[in-house]
Structures are given as C-alpha cells and as structure tokens.
Amino acid sequence: MPIPTTRLPSGEPIPAFGLGTWMMGESDKKRGDEVAALKLGLDLGATLIDTAEMYGDGEAEEIVGDAIAGRRDSLFIVSKVLPENASRADTIAACEGSLKRLRTDRIDLYLLHWRGSTPLEHTLEGFVQLQRDGKIRHWGVSNFDTDDMEELLALPGGNACATNQVLYNLKRRRIEFDLVPFCRARNIPIMAYSPIEQGRLLGAAALKEVAQRHGATTAQVALAWLLEQPATIVIPKATNPEHVRENFAALDLRLTDEDRAILDRAFPPPSKKYALEML
Image (tube, rainbow, N blue to C red):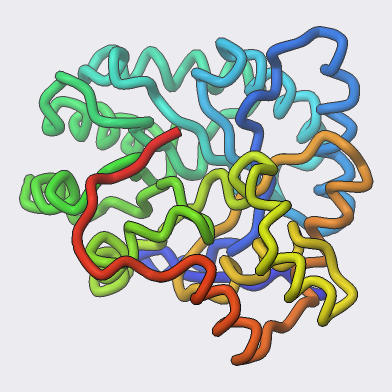
C-alpha cells in the first residue's frame, strides 16, 4: 500500500509513516543490523527517517548516513538539536555536525529536541540562518506543550514551525485534550514518537482482542490506530527485519468502529489537561 501523507503548514506533503532511530548507534555489534533495517525500510517504500544528534551521541546519524547513501534525493530526513546547543551560533554548529555525520548537504526538517534555558528567539535565529544558507528546509520543535507552542508562535517568525514531535500512542493520549487540537487548528502536524511504547503496549488485552479479530499483531493494531489520527506522522523504530515488515503491514490494516470502541474503553481519551509526558 502507498504510504499516506499529511501536509506541513507550508502545504508541502510529508509521509505520515517513517523510520525511527531512537536507541540506534549504542552498540557497535548492532550497527550492521541497524543499517540493514533502515535500508529494508527504504526498499519497502519509506522515504522519511527521523534521527537526532543525541541518539548514540551522533552514531545514529552516522548509521542513517550509511543507509541513505546513493538515494538521498528521494528522502525526507529529520534531525534534532539538543537544547544545550540551541543558541544561535551553537544551533548552526550543531546542524553542521549533523550534516557531516549524515553525509548530506541539507536536512529537510530540523527540530529543537526539547525546551531548555536558551531563549527561543535565539534558536529561531539559528534556524532562520540555516534556512537562508540552504542547510535546512524546514524547522520545528519536539516535546513542546501547548503553552510552549503559544509562546513560540507569538515570536516573530515563530509561525513557521513545521511540526511538534511528542510522545503519542494509545497509552499516552493526554495530548489529545489540548495540544493536538491546538496544533491541528494551525495545520502543524504531530510527529508521534514511541508509537508502541517501546514494546510495552503489546501485551494489552484490548490490543490482543482487536488483533485477533483481524489476524494481525498487536503492534500493527497500535500503529494502525495512530495512522488513523489526522495530521499525525508515525515513526516506529525496528532493527529486526521481521519487525520492519510487520510495521509496514500496519498500513493495510483498517480498524472498525467496534475496534475503536474496544481501544477507547481500554485506553480512554483524556477528560482534562495533564502535563506533557516525555520518555
């Protein structure tokens, strides 16, 4: 099945399903498998890869660089700058380090990984300069709650924010109360990291029930539920070829109203505002 798309605020289409790399690059012994898993994902049709300078202290970006060699122009690469590197000058330097590790001349979407002590306007100045220099195409944020987004968008140029990457899965629905509606009203897609809660979701009875109804796996049900959410980009990480293929098969799974009711009873949507969750 073709990978669905959503749109950035600029109107540019972006894949709603991609490849995550969190916790890659942490073991030399696993490097070959990690590169192979990303290459398999690309072979199966993925074009979006999410990474960060923090992952494996830059090693995940090196792994992505290996995986995308020879096919960079067809891909949408996302990376992130750490908050301690988020001053104007340090943002530029951090991006240049990421570009070197990725072995590319541009990053399609560059995110502030979470909010730190650096004033947001200083980080924005770095993003704007990187755009002017052609080193990034879009910028956004990660782990920003609604009040952070309001502050960001009120800054000069802040309304160019392209996405907010946050923890979102069936077990972590708190953002649906206010952050999701806030972003959707402004055409800012949510990027959902940890879509299967690093595997901890997969034993849930409700997921097993729905999976059995479809002859699917619980991971596929969890991913299919997220893929149904409007303006949401899902970035599961897998290093096992079987898991990579399993994740892609979620694109073909169609949940029913009864399925959704079962999942809502087990994982109810929020009825009030909660603090933003992070992993």
